[in-house]
Length: 200
Image (cartoon, rainbow, N blue to C red; front, top):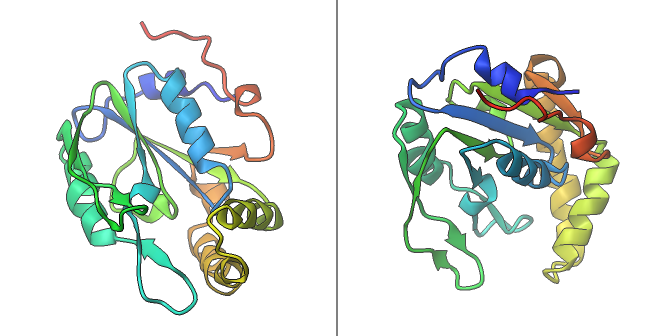
């Protein structure tokens, strides 16, 4: 069982202000579900979803990608210096524009779930990799994207672009070996974490 609170108590926040937990994994591995789960169980923690900075582009295969420059300016640069005020500007897909700024005031800590999160320029206090077989991620991803009527384009994007990028990232990063914790994205998260130890 993973006792996250115990691990956090073992050191002070690396940015000098608040704890940061990064949740990484393949697309559709369960990152968002785990991020929400941790946000609900870690007292005083807020949540940032990386997909808020996923934007449309004109690539003939994929329909979008992360705006790394905006994510760096809004989120990462502030985490590094321990700034508690983060000016979130998620992309509003239904209206095709960047949503009005939403100031997030960080309390005790922050959970960030983000594709390729372990490679981002941040000294995370805790890193978690969600390990889910690629074929399950593909099935989940296609089911999710079919809800947006993307059809065959979704499968092409997943099989020709996104999963090969993930394979390369995993080969270069070795997240199963380098992350602080590895969780099984096919099992219930409440069976893998123990939050019975309360904060002193």
